[in-house]
Length: 232
Image (cartoon, rainbow, N blue to C red; front, side, top):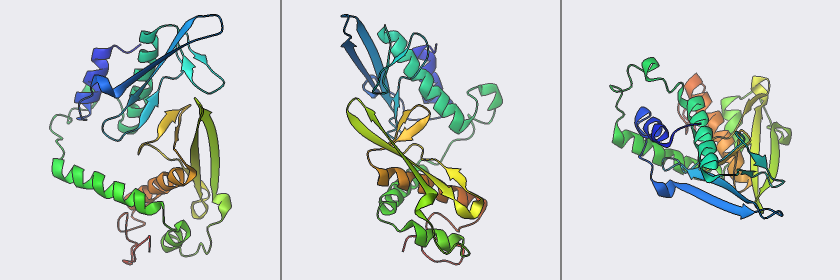
């Protein structure tokens, strides 16, 4: 189990993220048919609005709706913290500060980071209306068509609300799979889920574009190597 103070220290200091507050945590309880009280919780990241639900762990019980319930609130809260820590570890690497000796010196440019977040948000909005095939063939001209089979969709129901996941299999890369991640998604069962399929697709394609930019396949998230706008 992860101590609350350790969690706050890891989250707020080790990664230089916006400080968390009590209002970022959500708690819920219910009675089962035997009159026993069960608890669950969630955490909404103040940095990217990703929602993390308590999942698995000590004395957990998974309901048919996919919600994990616990016999005590503190156990539910600890499970939520564990989910957040695991997600951040996968993104940022180990929490062991001894392995991050340059951490205290690596201070990001706040204004640049703010512009980057705004730019990414605008791009995600544009992606919801974009023709992904047009963008894809500008990156891989030999790929004349982007078939519907390049996308796989899943829908689950959590507490009466349907949420969606989409994965993109890049045909020109021998079907390398790109999963949506963050950007307001709900993390459950190791996957990020979104309010509709189009949002899930947009985030998955954003992840794909980010990888292409890192690989030098595109000039940046907006333009191909020959200067053409990807989304026009």
